[in-house]
Length: 250
Image (tube, rainbow, N blue to C red):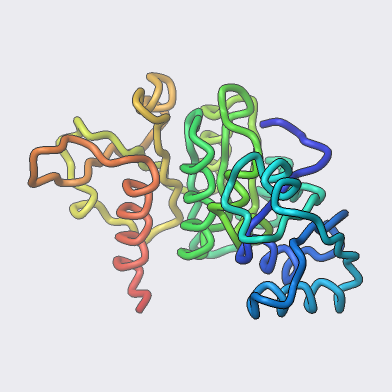
């Protein structure tokens, strides 16, 4: 993943989340003239309380800063959240947890899918997302927008070799389950109430051969209609929330 020195983030929810979770990471804040939007005015008051200086600019400038995205009148330039070192994350976050849940994605390309995965991982209380260093999208404004508050709450772990990383997670006591539509076993038939890594394949290509061979189990999502697959974010949501259901989380 790219190690960007700064990251542009925009939109009321994304900026509010940055102010709540990582105010010291915000370098600059740009906003349209206030007075006619209560939500924006409240957000800018929060920014002032956090010591963030707000620069008032016109819509054209905001559009340019946000790359044409739906900025809702506010854009920030910030330091990106840290990408965690695998070994340190494994020792400090995964091993101490008695029932860890990790999401691994084999070469994710779509920034909206990565943003959705971050938000999903936050929702299920996952201990992190493991991504391949090569052929994976970086932290972009689109990722920040979709992830909203999860950008600073979910550990993002970058690895050069996903198979090796999955092997280390297995040695640490986690079971590795790969999502594969051609599998003969439904995820509803698996025992997911155990230390677990869910592995999702890249958009359109699925799991690579070596990644697939590293999995303890392969599981499919039962499909009853005419479509034969779900997008990455939706498939991950089904798998992770079924895991919570089996763990008795209400």
